[in-house]
Image (cartoon, rainbow, N blue to C red; front, top):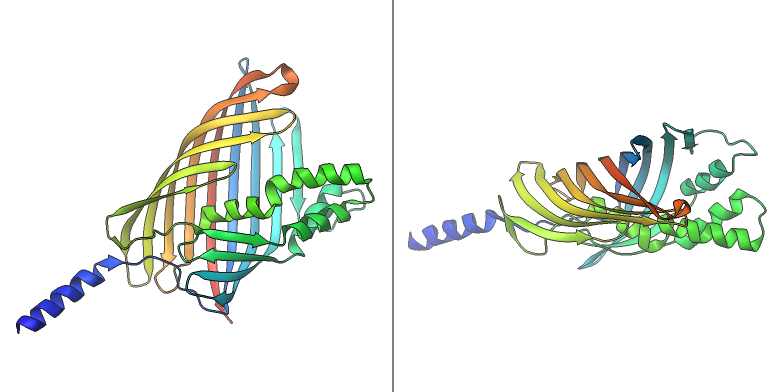
Amino acid sequence: MWFLVVFLTTTSLITAQNNLSYRLKIGDQFTVYQLASQDIVQDMNGSKHEIKNKIEGDYTFVIEGVSDSLYDIRFKFDRFKMTASSNLVGEIMSINTTDSISDDDIEGKIFSQLVTTDLSMKMYKNGKIKSIEGSKALIDNMINAAGDFDEFTKELMRESMKKEFSNKSLAQSFEQMTYIYPSEIIKKGESWTNAFEGELAAKNTWTLNNITEDDIIITGKSTIIFKNSDSDVEMNLTGDMTSSITTSLENGFVKHMSSKSVATGNSIMHNMNDTKVPTTITSNITYKIEKHVQ
């Protein structure tokens, strides 16, 4: 009887602790729908410049290899749509890879290559991405699709695209969806921390809110730093982000994730004698995932 009581007590303690991680199998396939909106407000001597950016797309993760610590994943963009507009100048950009492309639509030709090139990803079981390969081919395809430009122009385009589509930039971007699990065993109600790097850097505190029959419920609170610079504008903003996540108890992959952030600071306008313009960026990002088993 004493042995039975000890056994049951120990079992209860073990099941109350949770080793949160990905539990993926070769052949697992996940189609991700992403919707991101970004409102930028710049106060220019009492006159507001309002910019609205919206990105919508689908992409697919296919698990091709599993080891003790890493997953080998094939990644592909299936659809990409982006619009940008300004209250001062109107439409800035409109891209949709499902639309037909006219001969003079250089941006359309460039972004059409997003859906033609596969990338290879290595991801740890806590969601941190070790590496991504294939961005060089992706960028080369985008540049070559743009038209017959001289080598100097192509190099300028290549350097510009590396900010968003280099191996490192893509890894930092996708970690905002995947890198959510701790390295230690967690009980319900406990929290852990990690950090994102990149153009949007974040220090995150995650909390295990609940575990149901099918789902893991996690919430996040983050302090963020947004830095972006080019020849015309440099942004230095800080703020906060909140996240709500539901992941699969079976495989650990995200089922639904939503994040909202507000960052404030200054835009330094280099073409206006480095004038500092008060700036606020409000962002909302949603991911919805559908699993397919091959």
